[in-house]
Amino acid sequence: MGRITDAVKHLLIINVIFYAVTFLIPNMEDKMFEWFALFYPTSPFFKPWQFVTHMFMHGGLMHIIFNMYALWAFGSPLEQLWGRNKFFFFYFSAGLGAALVYTLSNYFLLDYNAVAVGASGAVYGVLVAFAMNFPNSKLALIFFPVPIAAKYFIPIILFGDLFFGFTNYSVGNIAHFAHIGGALFGFLIAFYWKNNQFKRWDK
Image (cartoon, helix red, strand yellow):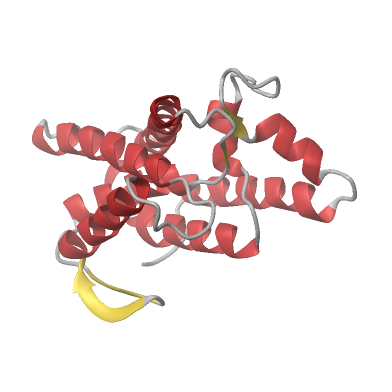
């Protein structure tokens, strides 16, 4: 972890602005969720832009704190490695992949009333890419205080999402399949770049 890089800084600012408008301005919460959360395509509230805007919406203070911390901690090293433009492309691709997989999962699970908010899908893509590029970095988070290498830590988290996504043991309204989708798309992009020696994009 180090300084906040340009792309990460701008993403943090946009997320905070969305959060502030949603929860600090009177009578805006319901409207913000109706406009910008990701609804199932058959919902009367669905709008195409929600595939992007849901990444900037959060359900509460701890939700945005955890996501923004992870974005800063793991996204900044990747942006330093790749450059600003490449990181932006990666982040939004992982987020869109998360929305796609989440929507498809709701189709197969017949859950047409599901609504998704949060940067978690895109952040999971960042986590996977971080583990691929910095596999031996030791991580110790609040809920897992023992340091463990990223190459082991991230797969454990993903296994948890797979388990909770396919069982009834999940606690709270967590979009596990969005996490899985973001991780999958993040892996595919990072794997391609890493194995094809994709050059850093100019800023």
